[in-house]
Image (cartoon, rainbow, N blue to C red):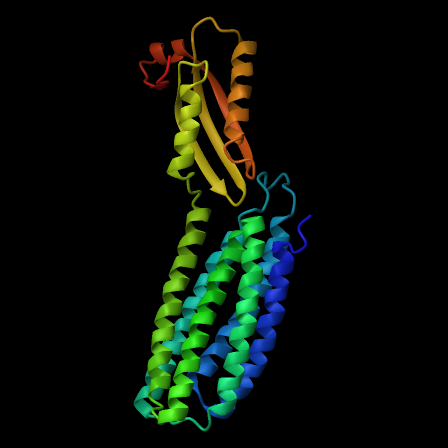
Length: 302
């Protein structure tokens, strides 16, 4: 039994982000550092996003009903897209504020406390990323994967912030604060686009990867059929939907055709037992294609 489910993991991430946001805001305001304030704002967004993901994952577990026959499994991918949009918006704000600070040449008040809080934040976020990776590996959940990317960007930015604060403390070159803020904003925006792209692909019913498709086609090529047609696949989380027309030779009984199709289903499901397969095989006689002058993909082996 899995100790930490994706739902529990998002709750832990929410509590962690809340704690970090509070201490970062306090130190960011007292020190006047734009990068620490930016990190605090990012932690605030983490709170909203992780909380939203928590409820999204709970909703996704609801059973299908007469209005939603396939359930609510796509809700987490809507959450993934919204998360990417929130991150992109935060990157835009950080970039804008960095330019404003660069032009105004605003110095920092003090850096000792800022360095301390960023060291602490880096350690906490590092532990959180390792924890989320373990949960993602066991569950394969896309929402947790998006959270990992987000918190990994936090690690990168925390490290960069630490370097900038040390440089400011040792050299007095405070302009590195807004300059680094702009670089962090660009990096965060890049990660946001990747998250949004992942969510869009899932909402648009992306097909299985080429390697898995080829494995499925190889099963048709080694089955007691004439061929197949109109093979379509789509993947949503851990569920795979597959529809195909299987062509049988003239004179085969319906019972025999059904038995062969059952065997094909079992072989396809064995490709990836971790997935929940929903396979629909239409049994088609060869005469239908001949009389309709339609082509189908003939199996390669005899």
